[in-house]
Length: 483
Image 1 (cartoon, helix red, strand yellow):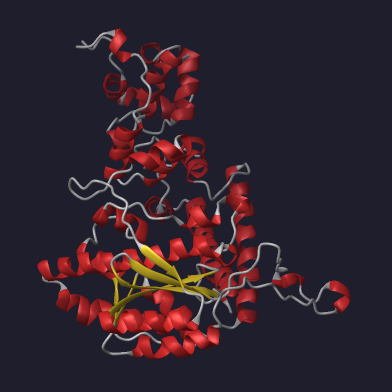
Image 2 (image 1 turned 120 degrees about the horizontal axis):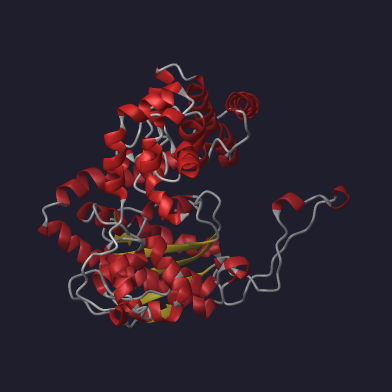
């Protein structure tokens, strides 16, 4: 019965809310006692009927705590209200107010749920995080570069400007696996261009790598059809390389380390350079959200074209090399344009907050260092990693079997909820703690405390977690990263 929940809570207690309860009695035992005796008061009046001596003595010693605990968890149903029932009627959701509140609290998961409920309304009502800034649509004059003469003109514009934003479009978030599809440049606010290099026609289908050579042990010829009106990669590299190395032209990017790694695979180096994402972390390190889309909205009040707007979502999503040239140009050129605008804004912030020295002497030099480290990688013995993974898997299974045997049932050791119920409800282990959600805390401190008191199941769980972490994060993951 729902009204008996308070009696169960009074007996079990809740350390997170400082409800003492009765030591040695968990939720499961408390529920059994309340079911048998009807209520907390009836139980305390009939303690002589408790058969377990230890449990009976604990109840005798903690009668007052149990009664106090009931008062602590009891919800008042007679609180005076200044509003009537009509005012409490469920209202329709104010998407604008809800979204503003969730954005202010950085509740990104909840924002995405609201977005799924009302995608159109949310897009229209998103507001800038900067003080009083109104959203606006920044206009741009974007050019699709389809011949070398036009490319030369843009290179000349960049040299004249002394500053150019550079952005790459690729097929993969991992720069080491990404194929270069195009490059965008911006030489002034609202003035940007996109250089397409490897866009493919929709009807050209590439077979996954693992299928190559499977047909009758004969290599499968894979020649995707490129869209017309694109430039030759080698010709573009020859012309862009001097610009990207020109000491008189500052190259600006957003998350430039990614672009550096991609371009380096084609022999291109950027110098000198600035990175707006690094600038943003430096001036607003305590804030969440440093993507270009988020910074454009926060500082410029502009809703950018999102990646999903041109590639789609879910199972129908395509990679960027299959995006139509006109759509690709609008998206990619805008990225470069916004990067240049953000650079102007963030550089002023660095000066105002006297952070230029930190940026120029510490943060910026590390971009190239990290790019080179990632490109160099580390040497690993994949055969030994495979052996380790197999050994860890065997040991993990042995630990699982021993844990299940000790507790007397099979459960998901990786589930904190199930583990907490086993340790503190079924096994009645001491020092139980609960989180604000009411779930038992089973972190490393709790388990180490129990292991130190001689509870072998806690020590086995710690070993199981350590081996599982080593296997999933290192021995398995490193094998997948080899390229």
